[in-house]
Image (cartoon, rainbow, N blue to C red; front, side, top):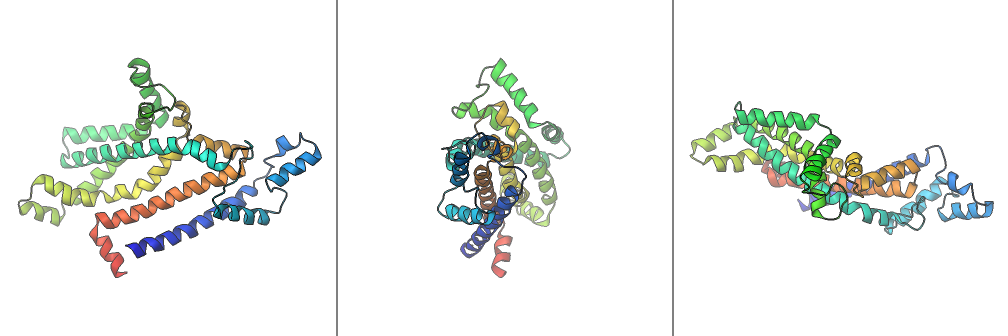
Length: 310
């Protein structure tokens, strides 16, 4: 497993290099000058110094070499639109809020979704099963911003249990977390129900029950361990969708996260910010894929055997 993890880490570095390279040249191929609106108002000498400061007077290839050199030293550059603010400053400002809500939403989505899915599968055709499927249908078909407004109206405006907006503590993160997680709960419940229904009739399940093993032990040791693999597969994409995918939720709850900052950087053609956010997104996604591969081997021994033979 250690050798496999090191190999995967090497592939992560190669993939990250390719992503950064493609993003850099595609970004510079966009028509327009990111400093045109501000620099054209300045005298010619000041404008030249302005372009030299950010290295925009050099050929693209030279800019690319300089960027890679700075990247190796952990320097992601300075924002073009906010002089004096480095990319790392923007990341330190927005990443904690996005990460906190993201992890909370994933934890709640996986926990409640898997619990509902297993319950529905074990009570197939009964009232519990139908209720879970109706809830899943509502969760999948309801946009996250609608759920956010409903949560605000019920729990912030009427009951006054939570603040209606802002991000100044755990209490303020509860409503946006559930607004994010509601769709995940619905999706995971469907995944788990379908996966459990495929496994519950397998021979090893029947054998375990014939040996007199308790229903709880059969469910935890045999059913959950095999049924959870589809959920693990979806975790990396779900993680990024929660952190960067829902700009409306951040706007509704006034959360200073990375989603809105990333969109603003793209709109303003702020090259350093775009590259910095792209690197962070790529690193998080690639690392999550590595963690998922390792979890596969932990959950399913057959995968460990296959890797060993390979």
